[in-house]
Length: 385
Image 1: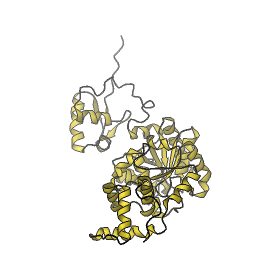
Image 2: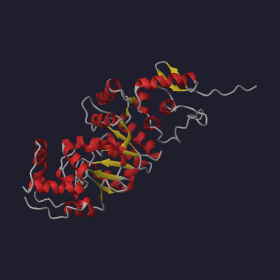
Image 3: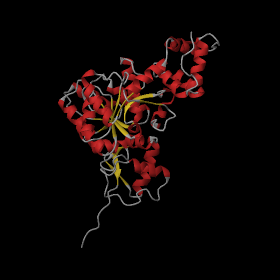
Image 4: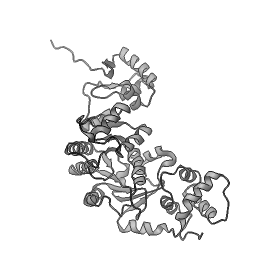
């Protein structure tokens, strides 16, 4: 196999090359690059594929067999030229604009991001709004309204650029001059679906259009499913607005839950198959019921606090509390109440730890039980003479 025609020691070129060689997510490739660095890992692959060195372990032989065919005629500079012609930019893990939250994916994080638009938007805290392509007018309305409220709070609305709920979310953010991020399953030179190309061009003007695969890559079912992990990882919380019983949007919720990100679901009519997946998330997987932007911002934790200010909360709410109780009280919603399981997920603690802390907070008068849920203790105004 011939040597590659570009500088293998350039870490950015190597990172870009790995995004072409590997069909993500590939934990073996991720582990190799994490251990050696993109450049040394690529040099090793070329050496092995060219027969200049051998591989001992079977799992690495199988991995090389997957990766080697894509070394043929590989010159990643072509894809980079295409990206530059579109006004785009490659963002590598070493760049300041690389989203730190992607590190939560571990060996399944992308090798590079191919970006069109305002690259710094990648670092803006975001909330994912996803759902069915075959959405109803109800779902599109809710999606657009939620996205507008989230964008007005200063957060970025993250979605997948698809028809239906995704498109409504992007439009909602754009309607208030907010920022929004569209993760594509194919290359950023192939705005897909084509019926949303004008919308995606608008997204690239106000926010970013992103892909983990280089220009020229076609969207496929596997790539749609793979990019859902990126939507979840980039976001502080993920909300499913409408989803059928077996919907791809549910995979985004699954990735978010696996990353310990909050998951919300919008309820719909019990007779609507378009909401069956949302109801399933709430019933079987503990997704939080959300109905508007304020509840989504609350779910995201600390986001848009100027919209959700709890005027009954005293100054120094967490003063004098031990670290465990402080985390639990901070995780209680600013409005309404939440069951113990939801508080545990928001605080990143076990259910038993949360129950113990809630007992102490109740005795201290800073939390109270409401049926089967808990909330912050409401400060009672003094009676006036």
